[in-house]
Length: 270
Length: 285
Image 1 (cartoon, helix red, strand yellow):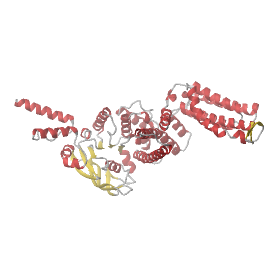
Image 2 (cartoon, one colour):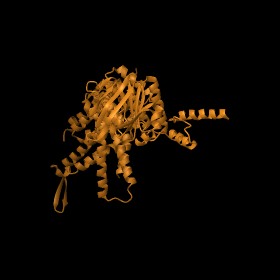
Image 3 (cartoon, rainbow over the protein chains, first blue to last red):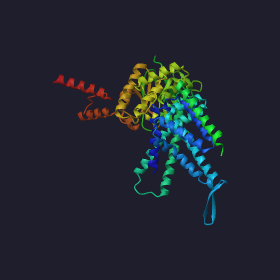
Image 4 (cartoon, rainbow over the protein chains, first blue to last red):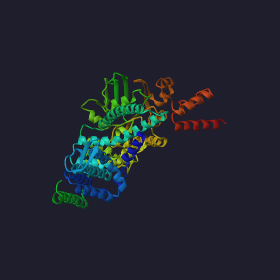
């Protein structure tokens, strides 16, 4: 199972193919994309009614479709986390006070399900889904190197940007290393392991991986120092905002205002 | 008088756990030389290279590089003039794209943007990786990664190029390409080369002189022909002479006299010897 998980994760992590496609979002300046994503995430957090959240999700899915991302692929990639959130939100209909929809009688133990509770659970899940979908759309349509440069441009602390960049770079190495370790373990597994034995092996592998990560970190630092690193990171990146980027940015602002208007003018706050 | 580029004087180095990695090591390398540091795994080759680049500080003794003693004052100056290619390319490629990696060192040197771009493009051209600028390091093959690490160091226009086990994990074609690249670099830029390796077939193709390290001590130094003829030292260092040298040693033993002396270290030299002996034989007939 671990092998399958690592294999799938490696395939996902290595897949940068969508960022190279000539799609609608791919053509937009990474800075505009980054800011637009922040606006959408903020919007998802601010909006309380369900209809504007669904509209926002439709817009995100529409943008992903216009960027030539397969709808099935995008849905599968974005649904995982909201799926977990839905499980976490499951108790909300039972614990939120409000108008009762139905009462469940379980061995004379009465449980109320309220409209407000169901509403909260759906709202919470949709909100997370909108945030996750926005982030995934940004990551899928932008090369990681461009994202790093955007973060530098918008003055996110350089140490943080460097850490993120190095982490991203070495995720692939450690994914490969973990995969090789799992394969090596499998090659020497000649009988069915009990769950406890599997857990022990997994714990040993994680320990080894931590030690290797530490040693690798040391060597990378030495390699940086050997090339004149003195604690400050400098970068060489030039980005230009075109007319299309300004139009895209304006449309995003317009959509956001419309969604907020729907929330406050027509639907009101529930 | 030849200009001394690297001077390692009576250096000892202990690892933090107290293990003596280098003991009374003396190394002298002149400008433009191609020098090998030979030794088996754990002999102390990489540690010595790290000391030369100022990445480690010697526990005892002193090191001078390009006429400057390694100390906090000279450290950055030395590092900008001594290029270090690590054994594992993944240690050296830590940026999202090859372009970011190649410009990392150049920007740290405080060069202007135009110069950075020019140098980065030139270095990529030399190693044959033009068009790879936007590639992520994890999308490169091992051979390409090795070339990339040479390019990122080369872009800094170093006076000394240090390569730690450059042939590790390379396939035969990448190995041949690397040999050509190292030799052309030396011819083009008159760069001083220091190569640590236990690849005894590779070393004679790129270097002329060498030091043999074993258990942190220098067992022998000199021209490679002499070093590889000293079978006792080679054996003590847990090394072997190059394949072609062993073949000629066996041939000499078969004939019962030293027909070929000194023993050739490369196929080219062996071919020359064979031709020479065939020509002499045909004269006798």
